[in-house]
Image (cartoon, rainbow, N blue to C red):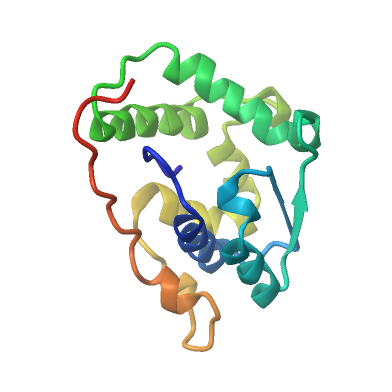
Length: 168
């Protein structure tokens, strides 16, 4: 999860490049109509990589019910219960919640497994989880020199400048 005070289209592209290096390119990405997704930068990235952008209809959250459900969980189980004092504190709290959500808590949609356990049962997902949870890149996941995503993904995401004052 990317935690910041705002996320612009360039940060979205950097994160997409990282994810495509880690997991491969999707055929379709469902996005909402926010400015970080509707500009030329994301559109050009999708076109260059052969990824279709499927925009949800304004005011129709059911178009992307999975992410809406996840966002509700983040709000109700993490953000509502915590007073986030700074950006670094928000990152720490949200990372702790994410770790619990993926590694500790069973999900009924996964037949009572945690997402990590479910991924372990599905080999194609477990390779990318190694990177997510340990920060270690297994040799077989290193991008090839010919990988479209390898140049940008090899760089770590830059730390954004911290705004002065506390988050509300």
